[in-house]
Length: 228
Image (cartoon, rainbow, N blue to C red):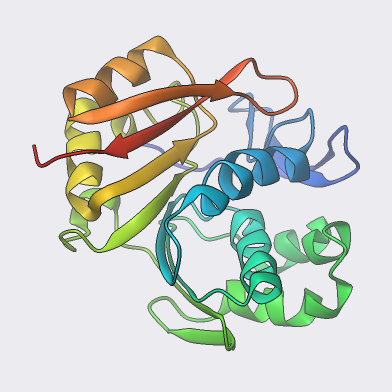
């Protein structure tokens, strides 16, 4: 089971945005090829932009630094599209680590900086209305403890890699994720390992290989096409 080390430090990525990297893990929260570009490509362009029209319920597995949530909030406001966003984060980051990353400024939304930090440091399970279009809640509930049948249209699967959090990339885990999605719903992830694709297929997903973000050849989008 993953236990976070205490050596995560800010690290610049190639598009000028920052992430947090642990030398103990040999892992970071976002791609060193560009944190902002990765989030936009994987989760916004190949996730939210491809979701069915109308209001959308999103689950994020691995809130982390909140970059995906911030970009989704910005997108929802610009498109005037209602998004209800639930994020799982068993190990929330402290306020000083979040502030050091400056995500709102990097995303070209400096006016959201204070509200974003308040959003990320609000108590767990508190529903926050960030705008008329974006409702947010984070929880420390583990993935397998989330009992919401067919509650989501889209899942951002942004856990650490299978090397670091292998328990989240199993057939059992993806079967549970399958049950959380409505028919026709999708999961998007940066990961494109063969073992992950096989686990998704065994869990009942139709898996699409897509062009990856900068620095990665591929990514996956998995569609719930039918009941298990």
